[in-house]
Amino acid sequence: MSGSPAAFRDMLANMCHGGKVAMLGIPTEDIAIDWNTVIFNMLTLKGIYGREMYETWYKMSVMIESGLDISPVITHRLPYTEFQQGFDAMLSGEASKVVLNWES
Image (cartoon, rainbow, N blue to C red):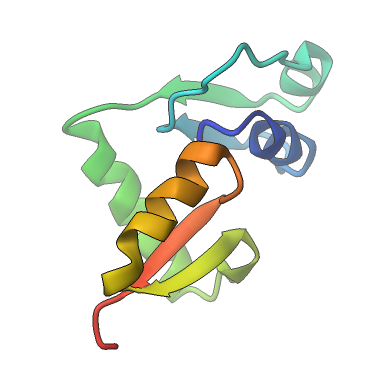
């Protein structure tokens, strides 16, 4: 989960009943939480850092291997030589996820 307030709101609105959210990104501003959605959908919000991040990555790889389409959250695909453009897009809040292609 990124630190984008818009992504956080969209994510909460689209979570399945009983879903779990791993907060990895650091928001740049306060984010209002719709507690009715969290409570009545039995959602779990958990902050993640350091070593636990790897467990989250493992779970994500299992979801991707099972067919989860992550393409809707990728907003930028760039050759690795244009990494600065990707960082600029992230810092400006324009990007959701940036993928750098190391084969170009």
